[in-house]
Length: 123
Image (cartoon, rainbow, N blue to C red; front, side):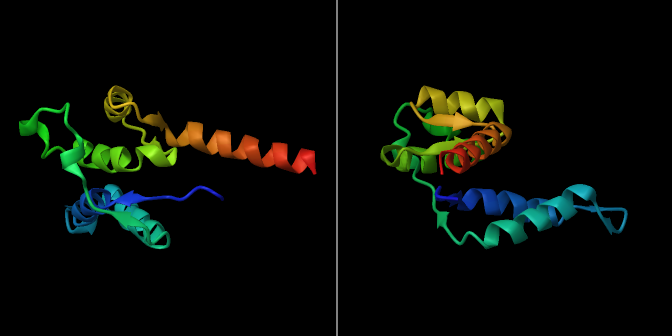
């Protein structure tokens, strides 16, 4: 794909915390999914630290929130025609308040699929 995926470091931190979840001595399904997600994300090798200083409108006491740390990366990339991909409705609302385009992963995948089929038809 022509889109560049940037993964906020906080996403990896959150997944790392989930991968240690054990359920009665066995890895829980959540932990297994987290480990698989980390393996997939590593291939993109494009990580970005948080930029909390860019969130001027936000309550300073709330800046420890993982959602706001993710949002700060989207704000950093605002001028690059960025889209925040998240299935978290509250995070999409926060992005909207900051003027950041956002989509669910399903919306993005359907849109990408439609773009590809239009290109094939045009050739």
